[in-house]
Length: 489
Image 1: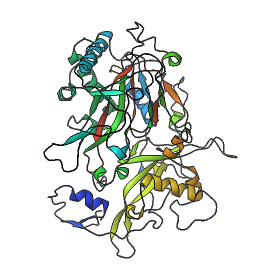
Image 2: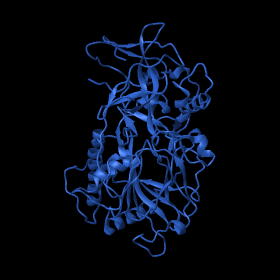
Image 3: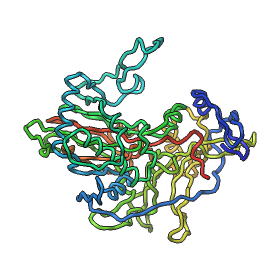
Image 4: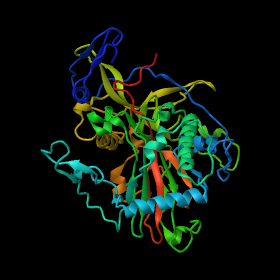
């Protein structure tokens, strides 16, 4: 925290993160001071709200692939992704380009590069990757983490060998529909460029970030459980703040084959073949009529996923109908890990965590900027037992009653009742859909591109019944929020 004369770095997880790297710099000609922190589970009511900007744009017909002189319909992609939903573009690659990728996949399989890889159990290592055993030296005594993956129920994946070369290609070339690998690489680069520009994610253009790309194949009987592709740094422990980049956008280009001579893949049927991409967007967040040019879908909300570098962790749910009120609106809930809190015992400024939404405040006139509205008091992670998401879920349940709870985290019981985690695994394990969500399914038709925000959208893959569900897939990265949060000058 900048206290006017020096930076103060808190203890515990943040100091541990700093100790993992060598720090040698000066900032504003002042030295870096490491200050111990007194642990408070809950603190005083937060400081006054800050301003936040919002943007709006007209809606388009999702059935059309109007490219607007670009590779994709960037305007429609922006609206879908910033509304926490999937953007779909059919026939993204030509038949010749799809055939090239299919042949490349077969070559990778012949060379034994595919490995069975489902969703990982973090207690057993990361996704079946090769990891070092205790006492290993210089890469020796490595073994594959035993996740218990099975080709009968899990997908097989293979890193794309030409991905590094793709990232090194210039973004300034013109896309063509040739059948060669360079034409495919250029399309992927142009896709990254157009999405970065339309979504306002400039660091996604940095080719040195950890952008990922892989082949995926799912045989009959396989599926993929509900999951998130990315989560808040605070949920990853101290090392979460050291990662140079995070997943920003998830994308897939389907290469599915029904196995019945349907090379075009157009015969993939949801009932016969299965393997649907099932997503769970929020029903009352940015509702809009997709058949009209209606810009009212913004509905007094800000973009989901990230706000001022703070990643989303949940929703403040709207209700179907509130008595004598208009339709209640769902708002994304963001976690700020660097909220300035003054320790009442030491008088020192210390970063705490806090949850907030952004919306217009009562009594304001039209066109006024939205403001941050805090829904919890600040808290110190050092006083939180276990995982921060489990902590938030427990506190929301405990404080949902009208009976006062002391000490309390949420500023009132209504906030607690309306709060719902993005990643509510307790509900998922019961087979429930996320609170306030609806189901949107997408057929993995060959040649179709799908893109969605990696932070916001819970998703899964339903069981494959027949055929081969395959895709070229990956994640475009953007920079991680810097240690200490974004500095606004």
